[in-house]
Amino acid sequence: METIILSNGVKMPLLGYGVYLVSPEECESCVLDATSTGYRLIDTAQAYYNEEGVGEAITKCGAPRSDLFIVTKVWITNAGEAKAALSIDESLRKLRTDYVDLLLIHQPYGDVYGSWRAMEKAYRDGKTRAIGVSNFQKGRFYDFAYHADVKPMVNQLQCNAVMQQNGIQPVLDEFGTKMMAWGPLGGQGSDAIFGNDTLKQIGVKYGKTASQVALRWLTQRGIVAIPKSTHRERMTENLDIFDFSLADCDMSAIARLNMHDEGAVNFNDPMFIKMLLDTYK
Image (cartoon, rainbow, N blue to C red; front, side, top):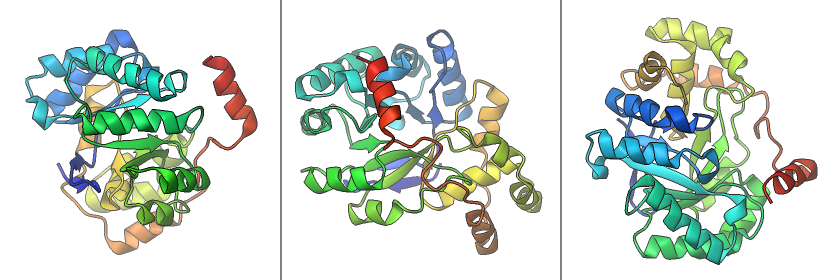
């Protein structure tokens, strides 16, 4: 497994398994399938309601805890220094571990600065090896990172071959922040990826599928990808991307596929923010 090095020196796998929309009932078995297939990075969140399943799986999978890279996220309803601190301990309890490898603020709303202070303390106390944010678009990210004492080590964003997040990359680079891609094979863009003629044609050159080419394009750029599947054969396919490298001409051809640079969700839309805040009071 190829890795990247975060700004604090922590090594992070470039490909992981995401459990968004994996039901609590099937999460344990899915994560066990993923770890037995070879995944070591597992991405969950308080709002996914399946941290317990991840915790059960990581205690049963047989891999040493030090070989795993566990990610979780603080949700909006736990924003603020005191509430975030309590929620971090609760996540650790559910995950059945003394620490996570990466802790993120899930959404850029509410008292994110209070949450960050709790996360900085958790980082100093060894409850997490790295801290970062999720869904912070470039203006919001710049303001937040500028004022944070510990700069975010990761920003998790919707990023894939047709939603490339190019505009935020210089801002991330300024603060030494790595990008992590949710929805690397879709998230309202999957048809454009799986059925994309350019990706399929490039795949023929390497004996790979369009989705494997799309994942390799991300990881070859140093972007961590976390595809999700409940099917073991697809987990295996998604993981099988490190035995080839895309030529420069192929990387450029994929770069021209960009359709919607900031992703399908406008996190600056007041109506979207109102919907989230009203839903999760």
